[in-house]
Image (cartoon, rainbow, N blue to C red; front, side, top):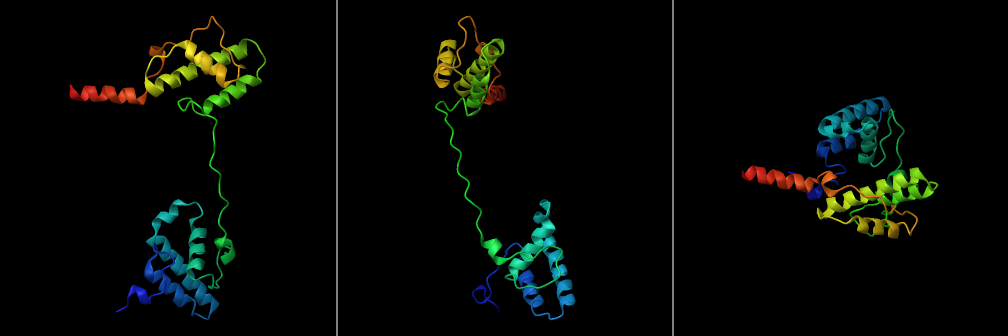
Length: 199
């Protein structure tokens, strides 16, 4: 009887111990043609034992890479793909920095600042005024979606002016959309559904 403590370390658990033993046997085959035939048979068995790998577009290339990694890159066969090196596989990808956003009011999100940046590029005129009004209505919708409380237009206008450092100002005669005209939030829909269920 064999115990796991006496066996070699399993390189890929998804393929199982038998695949690793087959690879170890392939390393002992001296004839290159027979060794290559054995390698192809092993790769075929690996695809059946781990069918989830087929979800990748280059799954055949990935299987051959795994085969070489199981052999500790010592298997020498005529593979359909370039043999990877141990150095390439040991290199860790560079760390991706976590994005930071300038969002003092979380309910507005980073999209608001992208819209504001575009609005600031426009020349003064009707087109810019319309864009500013759209941004203000977006802010009001985001505010209402966040807490479902009514909000005065003055609050939205003041916050837009503050966030844009005075570059985007809503005209005095402009009235934003009423809260009832704004689309309901998913939370509001869920509450209605719960009430309907009780009935």
